[in-house]
Amino acid sequence: MCRAIIHNSPFLICFICLNIVSVRAQVSANPIVHDPVLIKQDSVYHLFCTGMGIAHFSSTDMKHWKHEPPVFPQIPDWTAMKVKGFKGHFWAPDISFYKGKYYLFYAVSEFGKNTSCIGLAENKTLNTSSPNYKWIDKGMVVQSVPGRDMWNAIDPNLIVDEDGTPWLDFGSFWEGIKLVRLKSDLSAIDEHQQWFTLASRERKFGTADSLAGDAAIEAPFIFKHGDYYYLFVSFDYCCRGINSTYKVMVGRSKEMMGPYLDKKEVPMTKGGGSLVVEGNKDWYGVGHNAVYHVDGKDIIIYHGYSAADNGKPHLIVHDLLWDQDGWPVVQ
Image (cartoon, rainbow, N blue to C red; front, side):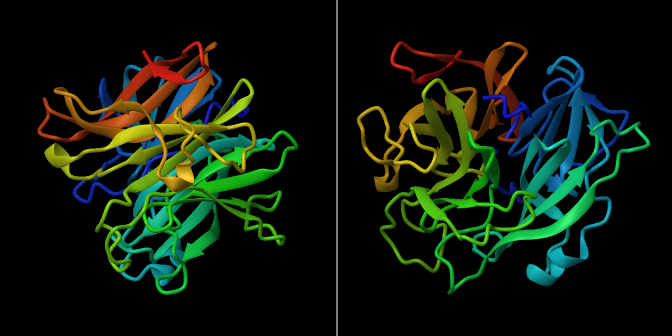
């Protein structure tokens, strides 16, 4: 599904030491990124990632990437009020083209806690040379509060259903991946408060620490292919360099709200998920993926912790094929 945006979600979270500085003249063949998402405007591909002010790259061939200025040269005032001590290291943006504008969801959070918010910014164009280029922050859309919510408002991913209704899937650890209906202008949760749990993993330890137990699931991304919606998520641990164990899992459903089942028909709400791609001798862990239909084919992008570069996270792009049973295969 191109979503009219070759876009859409995901990827978590903070590689705490990652501090991507945007330098317009710098070009990278295999850039260091975390939680990449993609969209194409005219003949230019735009990549947005976790980073100070939200990192932005552009490319004409998806091989050589130019650093662009960050989305936010100055952080919106509300972010530090909602997340105490926030200094501008935004997580896991999600880019979409919707009703004639570009919309960027992003996460503001405290590491290891569900003191988190998802915000939204809009722009008329992604061309940084255009006189119309200007990001306008629309403020907070979703918030999670420790002690009140058993979900985490990070890793946003916009999905628009066949009726044109916008939904936001998001989540990390705790009770897993959530889906909520948005207002038509994307500015807030819809008044009808329609919520769904799409995927989760059982917690074997206490609930105070999100990093305890076996509940590591995050970075949702929904992609429509044929008769099914495919829910991609990342299992296990990111952000640990050479000790990262990230992997991409998937389930599918004929209804966007689920239930999503894996190849063995195990519900993703019961810990199900079929492997799409995992780490190997070249990559310690790979994850926080996004899937697009662009240039006449499906592709999958994600970051991987490079064995050749001391565990730093780099961009990976692959063609995405589909087997005879309709399951995704990384080429």
